[in-house]
Image 1 (cartoon, one colour):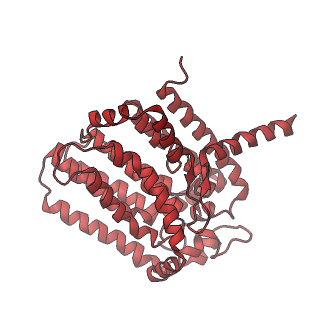
Image 2 (cartoon, rainbow, N blue to C red):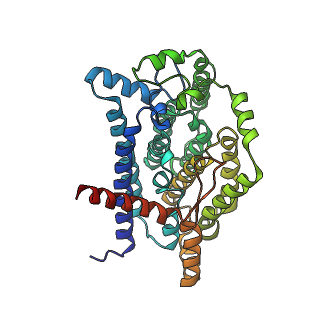
Image 3 (cartoon, rainbow, N blue to C red):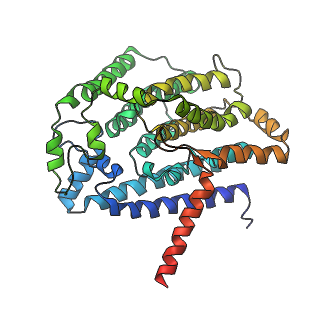
Length: 393
């Protein structure tokens, strides 16, 4: 077996990432419940309806019924969803020809490796938001009724897991639109439109109104942890309203930070802009698609300071949509192959180093960017294993 075949490289890389995620997920349980990621998981409905409370309520109930330590349940949910995420992506890659373009995507520091590069993102609920959209995009729908039904299920549960899901509703709607136009070729009925707006109104009512009446102290008191208060980690973000959060975030935005993150975003968008061309379809062009989803992603940057995490989520959604375009035969793959053939080896090396090895965003916009993220992460991981081996002997 040739280990350096591209499919084998993918398998080895994914195996390395999965093992790394397992190891670091286990190690960070020693920081339970103080670490931010765990405080987010501990948000439940014991004080009334609250944003992000679904998973917290599930692990709380299971823990109560089966007498299992909550941190073990959280760890189980984390490694399970990461495993599902990587298996699905591996199956998607196994169906396509992995060329230089896809290597740039696979080894992008803001995609698969980012939770290991920036450990503050590891285990966050974002992976559920991403994975739910990934699964939704891959299902083969037989009619509009099933398409809308699964939209209600996946988008609804995802929004109960984390309200950031609302910022990606247009990604869901694009899939519905393309399925309707290119595959199902059915007319959307009034009941679909009415049901959609009623559903969205219901979710907004819960998240923007009912959430305001939650008793956070009741949630905190449902656990018996020392130094755990309504101001611990993610709990401190439950009370501020929309205007407060917006003004707080805008006050921290600096031009130099915008330039840093925009540079990383453009670098990682280069493969799409340079190599991808859509087949003739009304309003569909590489630049149009890129600009539309770039503009749609801007509001979330005004509401959070962890821009690295947002870039990671956005890039995942973008790549998932790219697979969906390929599934619908919208991407000109001959054009892609021809563009790659025109590049010499020197150009490929320069492009690969610039995109995949040079820069990565820190989770917080105020912090410096990470240099040589993939090599640094690998050295940290294998160095840690070597230290443990030395300690044992």
